[in-house]
Image 1 (cartoon, helix red, strand yellow):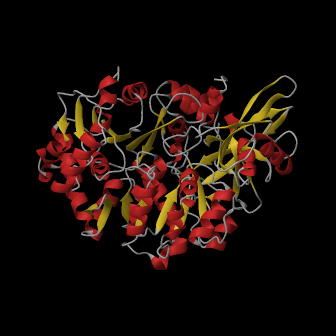
Image 2 (image 1 turned 45 degrees about the vertical axis):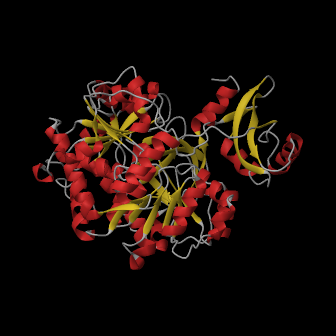
Image 3 (image 1 turned 30 degrees about the horizontal axis):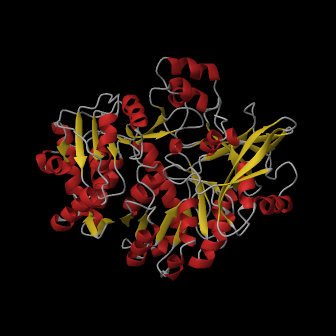
Length: 596
């Protein structure tokens, strides 16, 4: 562990514009944490052949060096595939330099923010890489945002330009606060699908599927205009180093309004190398740049951005972009055509696929790993996935503030563990109580992280940044976990989601895992509701299949859970409220009960 400093010092410096992490670095906080030699997970590194540390490059390097190496290394290999079309690494080099040149021609400079509001289509990697290559900061924007949510992000980020798919142009038009946006670039879904196919796709989207609400943005330019406006030869390579911010990733954090986590080139390079250390322990002799990585999770989400985007490109894999992963039939068809080697997904997607009969008919001979993240994978889902595909789900853990990977299971496990694994290479993890004291192995505590992947801080929010770090520089995740004697961590729940029953802490995840074992429960979400005698008691919202009654599930709960933990109320619903990547939104369930 590193030496601690006074928390008041962090807060004082934060108030003058320092972030908590910067303040701690000013007091000799190293990028690489010092990890105690008796940390329990170190033996697991040795047992599974995972490198305990990563070797960071020199400070004067950046993501640009990674991109440029791969553009020349992989050349004509497909970098991304979408709707039957593809772009090679060589084309990606050219197109992203053209976008970078265009942005520089607008008078935008190093450090300026540029928003990208689009699903997984070929334009996304072209634009995202173009922004970063121009020395600017990529601001990922969820295209499903309302105008109110978009207003907040545009204002808070200070984005000066916005690339947006025209399907969501009306949302931007209706945003009351457009912040500092001066340039709007409109993309059409079919822009990079070829002349004939692209025209057909755009025609169907507008006139058949009616996917594009009427809008008026007279000062905007089209993506094709922007792409061809300035020659790639005009590109000026910026002077970028590891400390420069590359990505502004918005997140609810542990509490409150969406905040922009500032992720540096160093944060993202470090996390890429940490993922590589894990993958090389299992696939070092079996690396094949022809492998396909399924990119069904949206690239504007940090899990997909890093694992499918940054790491996939670093390794030379082809990213199979899925614009609409909710269309499971279409997704399965694409999987059958391209036979992905790597399937990163969240529990919701795993669950949806195993409940489709056509999924079991796929050829999984190319499949090397199924990677779970973003939310807890339920054991019942993992069991069915393993049965169908022949491979276990390998679960990991992370958050926007950590680029995102914090911990992972070894890729060579033979069974689903129900745990998030061990800390990533060069990462120190502690579990603390309310007083920020470390808890004993086997006891519950808030998971806290220190490592080179941890964000610089929150954009414009020094106070919230200071509150997110412990006095000795660990990021507080807001997740409650337990670490065993081998260093493996199990998530118990979110700190803010705990249910307090007669003085006992009850964790919704535990209820949901237990009740999902019932064959009629497709998925479920648990919250606490007020009770005069107990303070709170658990209520379960259930999406069911077949015939099952409330009393049957209450009786099942009695067999699965001790008295104070079992659900006292069951409500059947057609669907559960979820985030853009499929996390069940317990906050929305509480709203349904009138509790928020």
